[in-house]
Image (cartoon, rainbow, N blue to C red; front, side, top):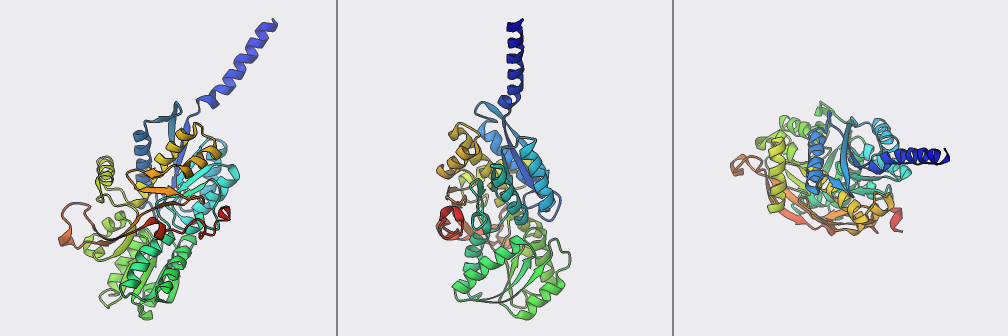
Length: 396
C-alpha cells in the first residue's frame, strides 16, 4: 500500500513537471497590425519571424519554437496588458518588434520587472539603450541617433543648413527631433522651429504652412508610417518642394516609398539599415520573403528576422532559456545574417552599418522594388552612440 502511494505521488510529480519540461521556446511579436504603422511592420514582421524560426530548424534545445502575435494598436496600456499576460500566464520567453516608442519603453520596463528579454526592432527612440536601458532589453535595426547622423548629417553637409521639424507628438518624435537637431547644430546648421503633430493626423495643412513660412531649407519629418507618407503627399499640394524647400523623411522605409510611388517619392534622401538589393545575402532574404508575401521586406521586417534568429542562436549557445544566460550570449555573439553584420554593446544596442539612400526617378528604376541608389555607408560606430556615451546607467 505504501509503495503504491509513493508510486502515485511520483507519477503526479512527473505529470506536474511534464508541461514545464515539454514547454518549448515561445516568442511573441507585439506590434501595430491595424493602424498608422501596419505597413511598416505589421503582419509582415510576423512573416519575417516565421522565416527565422524555419531557417533555424523549428526547434531549439530539442524543443519546439512557438510564435504568438498580437496587435497593440499603438496603446502602451494595451501593450503592457498583453505582455503581462504573455509573461505571467502564457510563458512567453521573449517579445520582439514592438513598433511605437511609447509602447517599447513601457514593455522595456515590464521586461526588466519580469526578468524577460525584449528585442525592440520597430521603435526608434535612442532612450531604449540610453537612460531607459535595462539588463534584458535590446535594440536592433536602427534608432533616432542613427537616422539623425545619416539623413541629418548628410543634408547639412550638402547645404541644408536651416531646419524646421514636423514632429510626431510622442516619445519617438521628440527623440528624433532632439537627435537630429544636435547633429544639425554640431555641423554648423540652425533649427528655426518645430511643430508637434498628433499621431495619425489626416490634415497636415496648418503644420505645413508653419514649415513653409519658416523659410527653412529643410523640412524635417520627424514622424513615420502613414503620417510620413500623408505629410509628403500634402506637402506636394502646398508646393513646398517646388517652392525651393526640401523634405527630409527622417524615418522612411521601403514600404513607404512603395506606397508613395516613385513619381512622388523621387529625390527623397533617407537612411535605412537594410535594403533587399545590397548584396547576395540581402537579395536571398528579399526574394524568399517576396515569394511568401508578394512584397520586399523593409528594414523593420528584415530586422525582425535578425532579432528572432539572434535570440534563438543565443538560447542554443546558452544551452538554456534562462534570461540571464541568454542575455549574456546575445551580448557575446556576433551578428552575421541576411540583415546585417554587427555586434551587441553592453547597453543592448546592436551596432551595424547604416546606409544613406536617394529614391530613384521612375526612369532610373529597372525592375519592381528597384527604388534606391546608395549615396553613402554610415559605419556603425559613427551611426550609433557608444555604450559609454549612450547615457545608459549599466555602463557606468
